[in-house]
Image 1 (tube, rainbow, N blue to C red):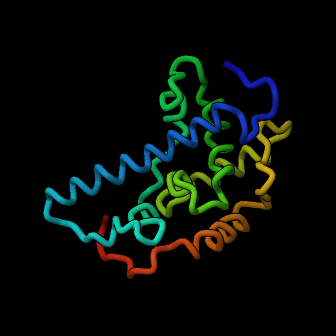
Image 2 (spheres, rainbow, N blue to C red):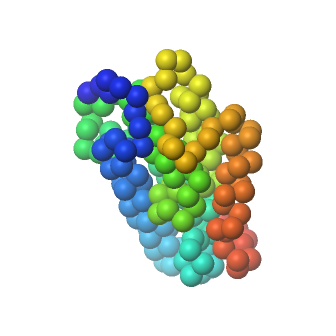
Image 3 (tube, rainbow, N blue to C red):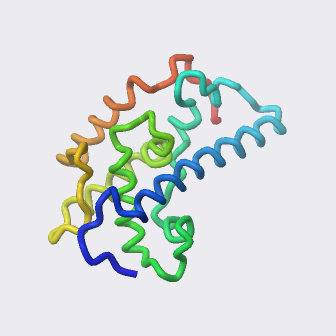
Length: 167
């Protein structure tokens, strides 16, 4: 498998991976919630979806990984890690400024955003370019875009106080 042109957000692999990342995030949160329930260590505020997202997603939802792209797309053995990194970066960019999107926190949660931004920055700066920015995203530099990410996410943080401890 090889991408013969610049990879864009509307490429089927990117679109499918975004969908898979959404499902991965939902499954991970369900599994964590089950473990907490059985361990007796549960604060329901970690998983309260009434305000659009949960504290668990904000803090720990960064479950998408470049290493998992090929498997998630059913292309293990066909897709190189380098190609998977490109799909991952474009998928992350496609939801970068969309905190309401079900996949946003799978890439841009607090536990993963720096790592994801570093990969995105590396690939955005490559010459010749292998990935394209989505039309609604500007990537200036790593620090600027981390600040921008915080601004996008601020209005989507749960309004209930953040629970203490791990979720």
